Image: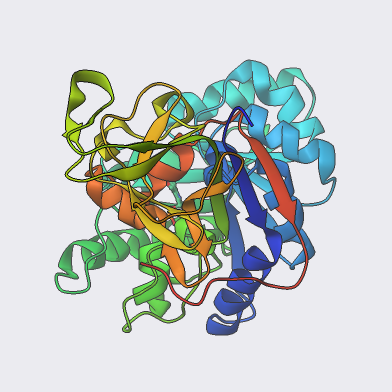
Length: 379
Ligand SMILES: Cc1ncc(COP(=O)(O)O)c(C=O)c1O
């Protein structure tokens, strides 16, 4: 009972994939984004569950993540969305991993390395259509492609970009990016004389804009169950990761009892308090001090005092029968009560992504594969 752990109901992922699949054309590939340890859910288990559910493409940020997946899944297609080096080319081709190319220089370096290794590297050209991050500027993309097409050893088989903003009430910015992307695609396909494998949309675009599904979509957060609660969206998903800690000690305390560093909280009345085996070292944000809640015995219990490095104190209320060894839910559901990463994110002024990937990677992940215990709603 000395740290927190994560419980993942893999059936939740299968249900979410099924909801997405039912909303899209059968010809659109799902390229599931599993970078950052599958948003904290565990890279290989999520990759395995997704491929069992029919997903044929996975996307990661780094080559090492791709290699970890390849070790477990010999057949799935893998895209590395970060920038790979020339020295990575032999392993990329040997392991059939697809990198992105971000510029003429980058493509040439990879092509050189592929020629030296007597092989051809298949890659997707990343175009910056307005995200202002990785990729060839969209205005230069036809020329970039023209140069890269001459490079033996490199085959640009796909084309991708990423949205900066997808806001249903202000669609112009995303529309502008999509138009640029489609214009680039037309120009490149005219040069090539055959279609490229085109993918553009991540979760928000997928949820609001069916017209941009193209050959593949790159969902991340929506398949982890977040960000799908606007009724205008095409489908709904539910979170399936729960984060839990043990109650280490319970004690009765009097009124006016100061709690934690600097005594930032003082009890109003006699109550029972519990100390939990989690702290900011485990990813339980210090911003939750005096503001967050946890679930114990189906009740929402406020975090009192400062969150410290390894421990958190909560108010159980004067009549609670909770004791040492009880389970505290930091993210998840207990009885009818639930707390999801969105609630924590609001308090911490961040996004659910950061809460999920912030959960200590070393915390044990327990996978439950039984019948779906998906919670009925998300906050
Ligand atoms: C290039 C790219 N595509 C897709 C995604 C998935 O985004 P989301 O989790 O919002 O669906 C990300 C995530 O950051 C990304 O960087």
